[in-house]
Length: 350
Ligand code: CP3
Image 1: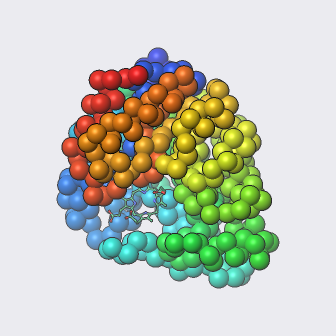
Image 2: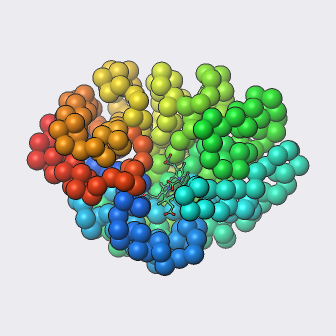
């Protein structure tokens, strides 16, 4: 079922194969979500957020919503990174205004609560969503699948929810490395299986979100961020050599070049804080860079937005570049600002 890369027809895949396009292809992290009134209407029809992720008909609908409004180059599967811990057997709830809540893993014996064999059957609705999207997407639009990376998933699984500093996960990684290594090994295999199945059902590219990679010191970044990403990238390359991986190790700063050399993804997501000029100079030439407009700049809009977009385009004019935000779109973002961004991109190019 895997589709070959069609660089001639899909701008995003062309850029991920190393071509430059002007204007660059564009999609936005969290492009489906609460800033869209039509999303909030669908969301109100289900009791819980996970039900939305596990109901293919609704997940397809909300995936397509942003594409009906904006000429985006990609659709990203509507789901969440926390479906993996959920499918492994953890309790995961999304409480209104409070973010996700999990029953945290506290000690090595708790790993027995995780059932990797349950992963495929429990995630089947997500694969059905991918397959339906692959059938329905317009010809120029690329279907992106995704997963959370092991470190970020482990953060939520040990902490039991969101955190400002991820102290529990950082402490366990340092103080109980054997426990932590077993958890990361389970997650690495789960992520490979999950992304492999998304590709088998029609995902044309996959993104690995390591949202909290930036809280670790250098040595721990190598062990818990770079090494698992390298294993995931290698396993997927072996199974699907033509399907590009976009890695997003948010916040690793000066370790970005080392990450790219070790993992060799087709594309690298740059976070908001990374200077574009530095990234353009320091990252290997063949790799596509993705990013990195500040979501707050998009929220504010106006002349600040135009200037920021122009600066990003100028910095990456000599590289394969995918325009995106440096982190997810904020729920308060006016739709008119998203329209202005895309109009600006398409009219000016470089
Ligand atoms: O449009 C898309 O990008 C596809 C869908 C998508 C969602 N979450 C939908 C969602 C994607 C790719 C994600 C990834 C995700 N989820 C990440 C990695 C990216 C990042 O932002 O760093 C993380 C860390 C999560 C975990 C998560 N999911 C949190 C912390 C929350 C609560 C906070 C919040 O923003 O609401 C969610 C819930 C969530 N995931 C919503 C959506 C649309 C909102 C829930 C709702 O509508 O009730």
